[in-house]
Image 1 (tube, rainbow, N blue to C red):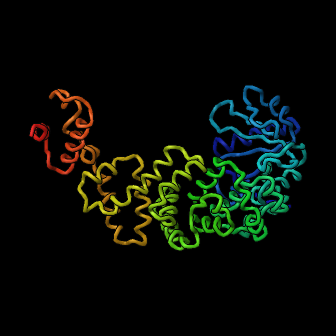
Image 2: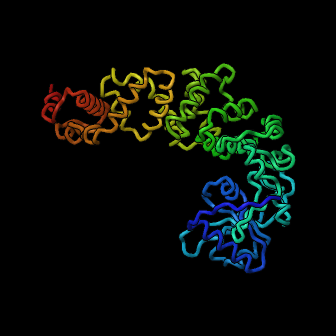
Image 3: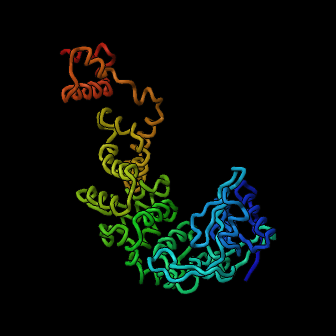
Length: 418
């Protein structure tokens, strides 16, 4: 066990998390910060949230903080959420030190036994996430050599990697994500265990897989992560449609380029698919992925739009403005342009197009998307009834307006009466 003194940033969240520990200590319970917040402090990063581990049982935690200021979201597993009475800080999860029984569903323990801090550390996933911190004394409590592995830059399972993965199959994806996020390597035995068990990822729900995939695609080591998914067999469970052997080099090149073009995971997913699948297979693969990973309709349409818009955007300076402008005013145009920018890293002729498009996106809104010269009310006023011809006339008038062939309403009405 090794102790160091990290610097704790003074924020509303950290102050509340200290208060939670203090109240538990005053009531004579052991209490420490645990998990990811400790890892972040050791690495010199500011934690986003704070978790507390304690010797108090869930009922004792609720009695101490009051039922009105706690939520019993995981009491069966020893977890109670404590709310800030003042409302200025995020809730803090307080978990009782525990050991876990078997994991029949590969996700949650069948039962738990309340235990000690040292025993609790042994049931956690990776050494970098298995440390505790005493915010009152400023000391790290490290039973699993998490600090050593942070210094070495490795993600290593606590104890037997096969056992940790058997408990929760999602830990395979989490291992890759943590390594990608921090620029670490996978410890060899942990990596070997992932490769042995990768096929069992199929038992994990699509929603849980999707969250890990999205977070991983947002890291700066996205190319390494996807290649690691492939080499360990995880990619076959995530996107089995890809023929990775043939697509590996162009896909990695595209993903590397995407790091310099934005952080939207949807653009990076589109880049992976575009570089790995024939155009004729893209749409079918997209629909399959939506079903498998339970994408929201918004995310699905953003990826689909990014892929479908490329053939117009890449020729934008040569096409009529009426074909380009409708794309630029779409909510998901940023995803499309990130994908185009990633492509431009190897297709250098696209770089001027990317600049051209961004220049137009800087136009004032009334210039980029001027009000239509003709509206449905105008057509109804002329005695036309809504229907296919009605919609066609409005669409043609809008295209002529955008292309500068109709300059004002008088022009538009004259054109309509031709």
